[in-house]
Image 1 (cartoon, rainbow, N blue to C red):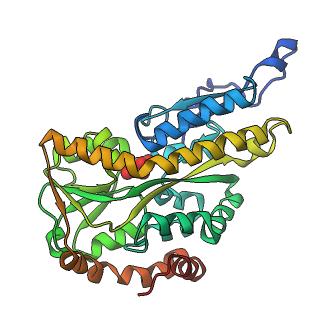
Image 2 (image 1 turned 135 degrees about the horizontal axis):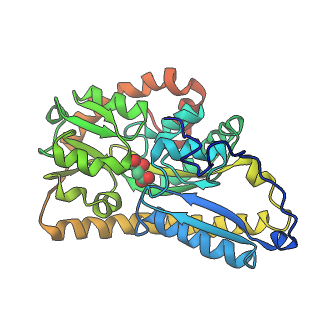
Length: 337
Ligand code: LMR
């Protein structure tokens, strides 16, 4: 969906071009960074965004004001990416599964099933040549990548138990946008459907979808456990974000400001990546305590049925994401088919 002038608060007939103000006061107004995201404040991404706000305002002595808009308050999924390109927001941290509209399908390689055996491998990949390769792909879209923020491994939620691959047969599964996820769910006989994050709760409640994949911190803070009966953990895929900015805005910042924001971003990134695991552990405990959902840890033999069914997606991904990134990812992750 294209955003209209009205959604940007531009009155009909008015020009979007800024008009220079003759008032000297204008020089003192802070540079505003609108930072939009789709999760609650009480998640790794929510907390890291607020940390960035705190540090950016502190390090720039108030010359920068960061306005954080959580929980799809301002825009949802695809719309926030359009808004960033148009300059209506300056900073986002979307899941990398949502980057195809930026012409950067290569990011979807990170969604490959079972490619990360553990968090350490994911971190090595994000911080190494793969991370750099991916961020470079954003520049032609007028976007600069600043950091990767972790959110841990996905679990499955559903209205029925999901132990082995055949349990997914016929299930309508919500996905966030990645064609790789679309493929791996098709390979287990499920019917994937893209929905914006803000629409998932209701879709689960009304039976529009039967299940979805997400991390415990998202399942807990969005209360998906209220509208799903089962959670299955097989570490089949991983959720991470890339913090991205409008390049024109970022590169046009005064010389004394950008290094301070980079410092703030580095510290916010350290926080995001330090807390992601523990936040998921805590969220899972809290979900268990509600008693509303059955948690199942998939066994090694059961997990093998998922792996066998989903593994052909690695081959398929070459056509979607390109041989170069798939090979580089496999190498960096120490992955062998
Ligand atoms: C989703 O849409 O499920 C996630 O990308 C939400 C998020 O940003 O964690």
